[in-house]
Image (tube, rainbow, N blue to C red; front, top):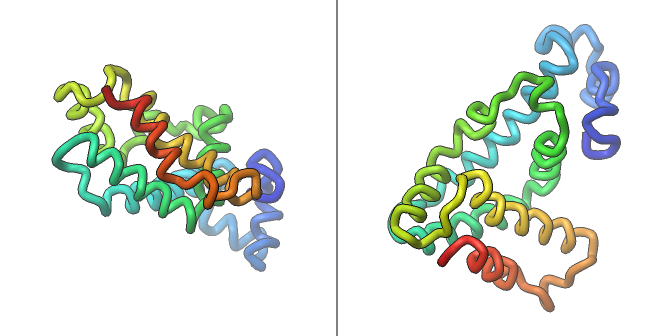
Length: 172
């Protein structure tokens, strides 16, 4: 998926990559969409697990900083997974695979709670949960990509600067 993109994925390529027969793949998955659905939901679940491992209770601004640090550290080790999530999110595939927004966000309840608490307490600007969280998540992902591609030198542009800019966009 990472080398050729999601659209180029075929069952035979998956089988070859896994060094198994196509028949073996069909034992576990009914079709390409089934594999793609599981790949997306699995990566989302792993990201949610990393986020849910940190304490997001208490002061919303501090919790947001902790969240951003968790996303950054997860992304340093799992950037390819985050890129696959992004590719799915930016395509029509979620609809084709019958993945609803509720299902896509199902394991991220703590983020929704953090967003609502931050808005209610007047710490975050008013807005929809996905929009606010995109200001926390997307800049981190783009930063990690730029560092990986040697577009940014993390010594000259440390992650804390990206976090600071994102916090300014989200908090009052």
